[in-house]
Amino acid sequence: MIRYIFLTFFISVLTFAAGFATPEQGSRSISLANAYTAISDDPSAIFYNPAGLNQMKGFSIDFGATFLMPSNSWEFEGEKVTTIDHTFIMPQLNFSYRVHEKLSLGLGISAPYAIGIEWPDAWEGAELIEQMSLQVINISPAISFQIIPNLHIGITYDLAVAAVELRKRTALGNDWIITKMASDEPTFAHGFKVGLHYTIDNFRTGLVFRYGHQLDFKGNADFDVTNDAFIGLKPNDQQMETTINLPNFLAWGVAYQLDSFLVTLDIQYTMWSSYDALTLKFSDGIPSSDGLDETVTTEKDWEDCFSFRVGMEYDTKAILPGLKLRLGYAYDLTPIPDETIDPSLPGSNRHLINVGVGYKLLSWLQLDAAYTYLLFEERESTNEHLKGIYTGNVQIFSITTRLMF
Image 1 (cartoon, rainbow, N blue to C red):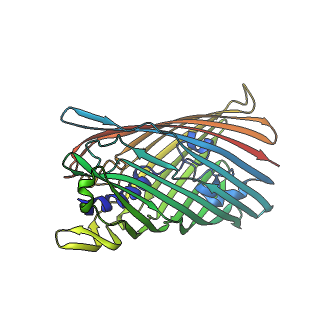
Image 2 (cartoon, helix red, strand yellow):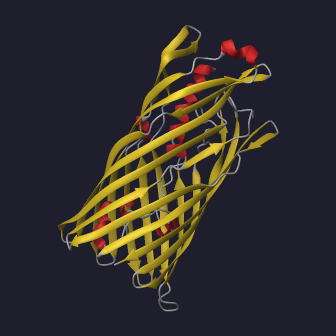
């Protein structure tokens, strides 16, 4: 069981990145269900499609925050357990500057994985997880330039700084070994994005490829017991490390402006089949039937998956100049097989319903706000370590301020 605890820790990190990916990097894009690859006409283009940066003039700043309030439940044979309520905050700050009519520069700072999950102490799945958090800060310098008239290319270098924490338990009769793990230093990862953006009349289209980060985690595993009589059974506190390659990502989008209506569509593809196995290394080794194992590998066999997103924006210029109303819907498929789903973050297919509003107060000042209700489809786990039915939802609020000079 100690061996399985370590495995599920890092599986949890990957579940966050897949089943709870949070591309919410601006209120306007959120309200359009993040169908933003073909639009990307504000500084958040640094995240969605850097080729779109060159649509803006002068100097622009976006700053704001997104608030996530997730709730997950597990139910088995009439017993139901719900996660403890938390609110996770993801700040965003983006700068863009059009140096020349054919060249723009940008810098984006975001926290796309400032999230976590916490179940009650000593619940039925405590040997898999009680609490986990993952914090990632992305710093992304960007450049966009015109190749030929109407066609632009954009590139970002993405530096990620990541840290993780975890708490689990192992049963010993009526008592427990409590496992706490945390990265002992920030993990730095390097990636990039390349995007294309094309405009002709009222039609726009975009294509973006994101190279997945490689996360090299090093951390401490500390153990404690709730009964000193079992102190001889707990493993040694020790160092651990592993390497995780987050998946490559591809998105294609189209958008069309019809008088006061803007309609946009995205098809996104995440290449999770690259995650077929996980290898962990331990400084002192962990108990197994053969003694102590310093290296442990488990097979995962995740699948590539699609996401479909559509949004619409209505400009009320004929009624109230400066006001825009937005609506969006998305359907995300999960890459996680039934056999490996666990309560670190129960992954399932997701429906996202989005609404939002934008208002240009002054020629240089705009405010945007958005709300999303994310619903997880009911999912039955066949994982031998904790069978049951998972349900969940997330409420997402966002507000963004844009300054234009």
